[in-house]
Image (cartoon, rainbow, N blue to C red; front, side, top):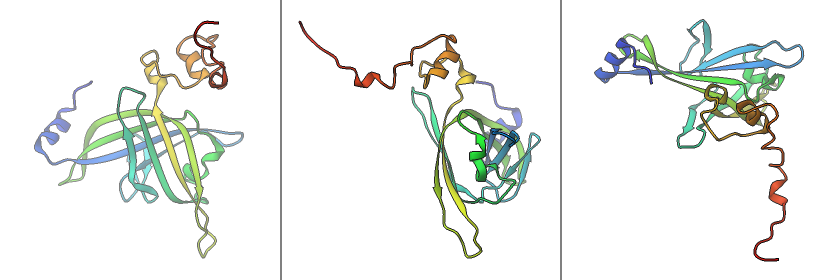
Length: 201
């Protein structure tokens, strides 16, 4: 694991740290919808970092990002609540216009000085890909504004960890990690229905 930048390490040692979580999602458009990169953060106004403008968390749940650890593929969940569906600048509001499955998601935690709000550097970065998205339609307000609530399940970005995990999730993932003709997952869906016989016949 790379060492922290000197300024970041010094700030951490001081015990006074402001943590800024940045979420970057790369989406591939369907049909005429162009590819896009969208970012979110846990602040109150737009924030630009690394050339990308991160939208404030007006809709990102206070929980923001929940994650699990263990010896399996690590998982995380992003939750967005009551997102207006007519915001053309917010790809999450129209995520069905994109091929979002396996889309790369980068979650970075920046270190800031709480006294000056200066960003000093990166504490840690995690790489994920979208596993699935659950949708829930929201209410329509008095002005006819429709909203949507989304729960986005993430898993470790396997392309970054090729050949370093045995937890493959699909035939495509298995082939990518091994060889194109690998058929290990061909019968996964039907194997639970196979009859088995034990003992002597």
